[in-house]
Length: 579
Image (cartoon, rainbow, N blue to C red):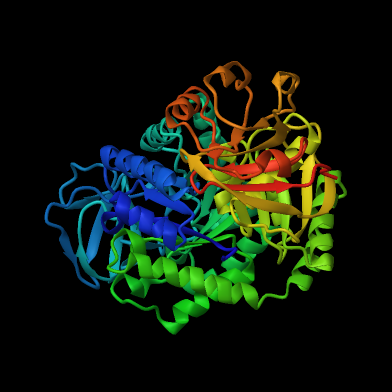
């Protein structure tokens, strides 16, 4: 399993539930919806399809909504115009001026000066300003071609006075909140105020989506530190960055952004043209393979595919290649050096000390996993900051937190039942990992959590534990999974004062059990199930029920921690003492 996460853009090549499910199975962790293409109805359909695949795959695929951002674009040009090198053209805000290329930016004449270079259509066409004539810019074409409507106009290295967000962006963000997406990617972030403006819109709409700031221009690079502090994560948007700044600077800027994000403990996505050739080819170029590996060695949390999965002919192959390339690259990393580097930037606070100690202990003991019990995801995020070789299994009762962890390198998110005590929480997280097949008996794990429970940002506990459990097989009914504490019921008094989330072990299923099952986590039965009665219990209480468990009353003991999977009929049980 690769540690580096994969963000894939949805589009015509990946629009059906079957296609999206295939991307998830191939390794996609986050589905990106680019609002620069399509309409609201299509975007909502993508979101619904991703939600449906969560149910089918059992994976918590996150959704990232990518806004258009404040852009300067030319207006309507009909069938387009031909620009010839040496030709003199005029650009202006007024679309009525005859012979003038309309531009949607009223301050163009204020921001440019004679000699300024203007780029059109992502740098395909170049102009040089020769004169400012009232409300119009006069420019000479230096690189020409056929210019069509609504193409982007870039002003490299110029601080433009665009708003933080447009009316369209605000509408799109509110749509994202209503649709309960997980991430909002903000285009063309120039300063911290841009991030604050987006967060205000999210909060007014009643959301708590994480904000990914896209660094795409000189201002964003210059103000990187304040943007990192304001945002929840960053994206190295190399396409527009390479237009706004010299292309030869982009690799160094990429390393700078990734390093700064790593030090701040914020996730970072490396995007644009990762596997561009795979839009039309079934295999990438050697240079693209090197590009992916270099981004992983730089420390990126995620790599992103755009056209490769949105409109490409080989979307599945592209995702599979990223997953395989990531595994090979990650195996070659020097994790001891990475951990030592992380120590240099550790803050003198309890949460950072525990997070670092859990990574160092896991490395020293060759632990199978670091298991974190987390509410908001902050515990897992802090541990992941040190980039351990050991996998991080992040277990939470909050599904929204699990989806946000899909962007964090090295983290495997798993759901579990809520807990009221630390022992119960530890049992729940271990049970979830066992139930998912990530841990087996004999594995040594490092566990981190925080007290008080259900409080974000309180990581203050570390424990080392060797997993010990047995297995039993029965015949289940339904497709539920649950964990809890064994209570063997031999007579009526055994129903009284059960432990939290009890799993009752009984000789047979009877209808008169109903009053005792309000807080139950499951039922284990020695005899074959009476389907009518059992289905009624499942319907009433959503319980996993497993029957035909031979000698269950004898082999299972009160206080043991147990995980039931009613779909497979598998029961795993551990020691009574969780310490």
